[in-house]
Image 1 (cartoon, helix red, strand yellow):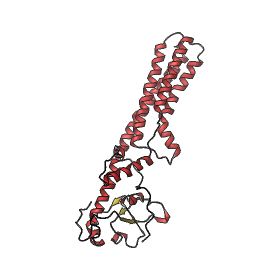
Image 2: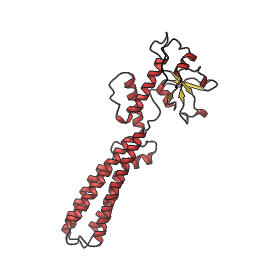
Image 3: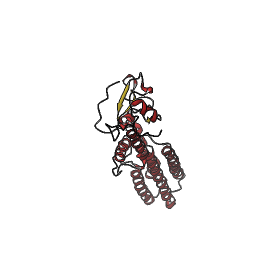
Image 4: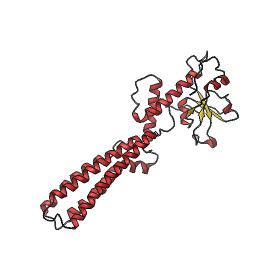
Length: 285
C-alpha cells in the first residue's frame, strides 16, 4: 500500500461543482439576460437609424431620451440576471480569460449598447446644440450607471465555493453554527459530512469507540494529482475491491480531493472483511 500523502494544512475536497438544479437555473437566467441585452442593443440600433434619418435634428428629444433610458433598463436587467447566473454556476479562476469575460460580460455589453449611439449623438452636426447637450449628458450618465452595475466587483469562483464548501462541511461535522453554508455549497458539504458520519459509524471498535475518519481508495495512476474518473472509497485496505491495487488513504475529505467521491454501498460486507464485525451494523448507503 502506498504511504499516506502528507496531510494538508486545510481540509480540502474535490472542486465544487454546480448541481443539475443550479446549472438549469443558471442557464435560464443567462437566456433571459441575453434577451434583455438583445433588446438593449436593438434600442441602440433604432436610435442610430433615427439619427441617420435626422429625426432628432430639431425635436423629438423625449423620444431620444426614452431610447437611452430603455437601453439602460434592459442593459441593467441583463447584467443583474447574468450575475445571478454566475452565483449559481461560477467560472474557475484557473481559466483567466473565461473568468474575466464571464464575470464582466454585463459591463462589456452595456458599453457596446451605449457607446456607438453616444458617439453619433455628439458627432451629429445637424442636431440642435441644446438637445445634443441634454441627450448626450443624459446618455453618458445612464451609460456610466448601467456599466457600473454590470461590473462584478467580487465575482464568485469555483475555488471560492470549494473553500466555502470545506468550511461548511467542517462546521456540520463539528455541530457548529453553519456560518459558511451558503445555498450554493450546502448540498455538497452535507454529502461530505454524511459520508464522514457513515464511516465513523462503520469503523467503531473497542480501540475507537467513536469510530474513525480514515478511508481507502485506489491511487491515481502515473503520478496524477487526482484520479481522472470518480472512485469509490472504502473503510479499510483489506476489502476485495482493493486487492492488488495501489491504495491511498486519508480522511473522507482527502478522499474527495482525490476524486474518490462516493462511499462504497457494501458497508456491512466491508465491516466483516475489515474486522469491524462487533461494530453496530450500518445500513447500506
